[in-house]
Image (cartoon, rainbow, N blue to C red):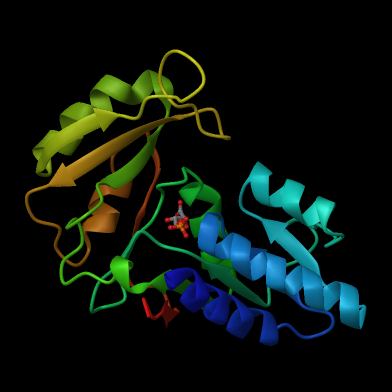
Length: 218
Ligand code: DER
């Protein structure tokens, strides 16, 4: 049933697409549903749009369904849609279960309008309830970053293991991911994490102008 809810929200996103749009396309299964719905409209209505992907997987889906790709070298996105792991009452997010948060945050920073599509399970009172905060780390900086994260209150730091190969998960940027839990994440905590040299990006999104569309778990 919640799949129906998700497909309804995916259709809402697809309905927003205008001819000529350049879309920032987030990663994850909910963005995927929206991309499917958009691809249908593109085909049926011969829409001329372009996508700036946030992961290899999204690039492959766009190529498969005939949605032309572009890059930030040629275009800024008119708007973006993406999923999230957690959304709190201030519309702060935890993202990055899919490991694409560097490009997702980069695109969101370049996009004037951002839609976050989630189901009710992602709505939390306090960030960190269900998901750790993923932090992308330059490999050589690992031990330094772990030390610094502990200083700002990390009480659990897990090096994300790879699936399908031995050793740690390696992001599409060639970095490692630390999944972290913290004692207290105050309202500018994203900046405290980013200030640590060796941190490439975190999955903490605070203070972005975004609209949240929630799929009912009917
Ligand atoms: O990795 C990400 O940031 C994804 O957007 C993720 O957080 C949401 O993925 P889902 O839609 O498959 O739950």
